[in-house]
Length: 522
Image (cartoon, rainbow, N blue to C red; front, side):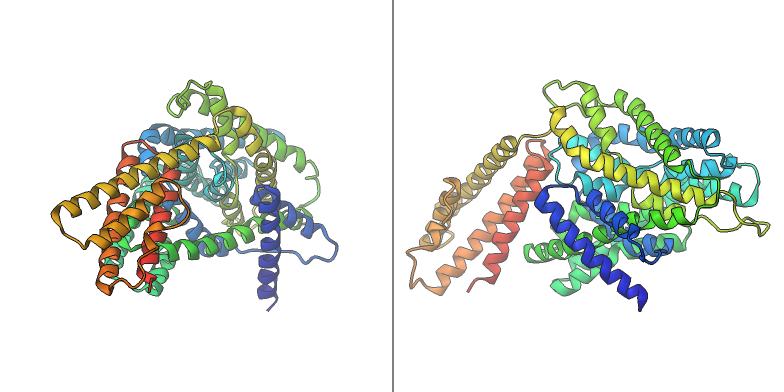
């Protein structure tokens, strides 16, 4: 009962803090970490111990899946080279650099120093997505930081397993074995994720029940994760691949009404899980600090040194790659590098990995340095979430690469005109063929004309009182055909790089709402 009560308190705290963050326009993850830290420092607060399996199994799959579904495949194809360099090269370099620094300034044993490096080597997809969700970043920049955080986990996970194995067994590193393990984790996880996505796609194409569709969507990330872990591959990679594949084909698997329901349900799930998990990060640090052995009082400075090293190393790796994501208009590459660097925060996944470090070595003795690794990991996570999270939006605004609200508004207005034009052309074809009642065509035409002129009232639904049921049915059928054509045109504009992924998602949501309203109408 105590655990249930703690979870309920966390949900209430996280909901209140996240609501305040939206009102004050402060990144919710940063404020939630601070709130958790403040609660943990209150005298009498019971210590919080979260099993790493709880975070890895319960929290991470849906958050990773939601983040992967949002990934723009069009932009990912343009930045896959820098993503690969960062997901492999930067992770290896970060692990080596942090390990060497830890040996020099913390006194950790060499194996545990490199365990710390492996834990902190990769950016966190949950934190990156949560922090970047409200920033008006250009598509390529947003996809670069988001895709890197999603795909670098296989690399860091292999490094972590190798480092922990050395620390526990006290043996030398077997690099050929490590390379084979990386291929197994990354390749096997990708195969499992693709297989789960294919199976889910087959089921969803044959399902029209909104409740069943929602259950399938909620179960999908857990299925991919558990199945991949059961065959000793990467559950994280499997969830990411399944999310990317299904996110690209989601419009073909369900109708507008179901898509709207799925978005609403997943919005609630993601909000609750993100809120609770970032509060837990803040709550964990004081508990871990109190359990530190004597002689480790320099941990705050050591954590700051590690965080500074990670940021400096990231700048050096990112700067040469910014030509790929350089916005049109010639913005200086160092500005893009600064934003990409500052957006690469650490978060929930490093904390879950650090908590999973074994308590004892192979000979039964206590694993030396484990508590310090936990504290340094959590401190770096807190520092990056708070410092980088609170300053990321001002940095983006000062960099000059953020998309202006006027730009987004103009793009949406232009796209709406294109979609309305496609609809009117279809109505002209139906009129020429005499394929529908004139009253229904005129009603649909007036509705499209009203949208084209930015009128808020549906003129096509006025003045038709007493119309025959057949006319109303024909009108709805025509509108469905027009919406289908507009959806196809919207995807074509996106694939042809004429509009951004943000505009595509926004207008697709509007089309889904309109189609859903037609289905629910009297």
